[in-house]
Image (tube, rainbow, N blue to C red):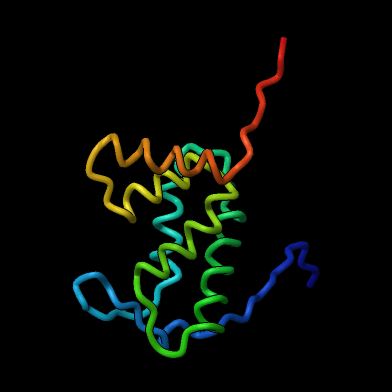
Length: 128
């Protein structure tokens, strides 16, 4: 038999050993899928590929598994995700931050965008 398909397998650390401590104190197993879901929502209709999202999920999961012994706070986990997302897509970053930081009004958005503007060089529009 001849197969023209290519199959790849990936080994990953088991996600069951790390617990995430939520804001209300509840502990639940670390979930790559929850991170992926939040990133997909933030990147909706943005020029961000599934591969780029998976790369962020992999980077955050690897950091958690190498730097955390048994528990990680949602605040710390959210910051890890935002640090990766900030350099990938500014709009997706602000979307993620708005949910993660629970923005209350437009001023929260303005503050976040202003801070983002001081952290990253502004892209110049091409002159006609």
